[in-house]
Image (tube, rainbow, N blue to C red; front, side, top):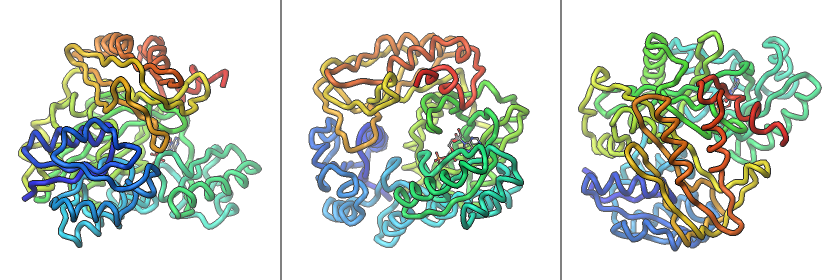
Length: 451
Ligand code: ADP
């Protein structure tokens, strides 16, 4: 059983997990760095514990400090949130060996899907199409060039240990491949201490469609349908929606089944996401599986009524899922905007600062997952996300209208602070977006021309 949970994260996701724990009557302990000493959610938790200075390497990423915090606070489980240690198999293993329940998949499953080359092999074994590419890692730039020649340019160089778009480069021809290969390898080494690269054919204007999976310890597994995350900048998601405007019921069923086959093959337990690209011909290809709670999980929560974080906790306690695939349905239309402290007018330069004026939108079907408030100072050490605005309405048209209104109501202002709110207001007024005719190049096509 679990009675006291350590939340090894910060910001909006720490608060999100805190809420789910409290709904299940669990005691909560949150960790915080010196830069987050003023975090408002500290007062909502049963206890909070400082784990070091601002830089994440000395606090949220420091395994000995997190484990020490767990020991002194007498918890029986750790929720890692997303980012930081969430997909670190070594950390999950330490928890397993210390008799601390890791609220997430087993370390073995994290390892199996965390290596993207291995995940591609798993997908192939599960009979799921993968993006054409190298058979495993490529040794050097010459081997990458051979693969690229056979696939045809453009190709993507990707880091096997990748995530967050790091260690990824698009090569359009042989001459540029050389420089890009060195760049990708260097970036992968710096970010993941692993310079392993592989090559994928670069699909032309795909959509990103991912499936949320839940699996209990008794072997039951369901998917909670898809999220369309095609609105991206630099391969990073900005807007997510469910359902995907691009799926037919038959395609949805095939993709959902494919996601489950991969998760089964990986020995998956708890919440995870299987990501696909969908090409213009309606063919889908597996790209990776994320072994954690996703930033965009609220989209699925609003669309299906399933509380994913509560489910994660229940699964970690060994409880059965309690519902079947047939009992899950997508209702209405849900959309989410990731609001960050970046200046879209200055090529998304991080622009943190102090929030002087703050107002959160509300009304039926509006959810704002955030830890910020007037007077809050956004620390410079972490990602620049300040909140997620989610709306749920009966139709896509109504959801777009509702989001437009909520974006007009959302006020987050301060002297040096800039946010992506104005960009989202423009996107939600854009005819192509409103028409659902988008792909992963939408932002480049319509919003970055000058930059
Ligand atoms: P990361 O784990 O670093 O986020 P992913 O493999 O999940 O990387 O890819 C992120 C995004 O990059 C995708 O959503 C898509 O927009 C783009 N992308 C990835 N692979 C391909 C590909 N083979 N062809 C075209 N775009 C791709």
